[in-house]
Amino acid sequence: MADLIGLAVAFLVLALVAFILGARGIAGFSMEIAKWLVIIFIVLAILTFFFR
Image 1 (cartoon, rainbow, N blue to C red):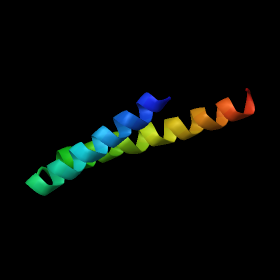
Image 2 (image 1 turned 90 degrees about the vertical axis):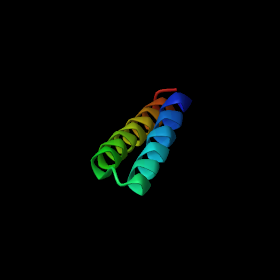
Image 3 (image 1 turned 90 degrees about the horizontal axis):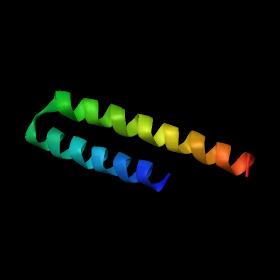
Image 4 (image 1 turned 45 degrees about the vertical axis):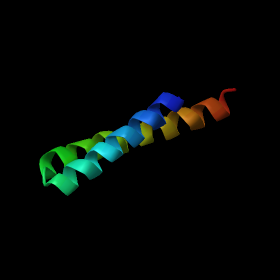
């Protein structure tokens, strides 16, 4: 599960760099991917907590 957080952070950094460089489409898409990776991580963490 730590890989999901690492990927989310990587996409967040990519989104910030793309936003600074003016590529707002790529920045928005990267933020969406980062958001979904964090949501998936949280759901898996909760499921792991309850079914452990």
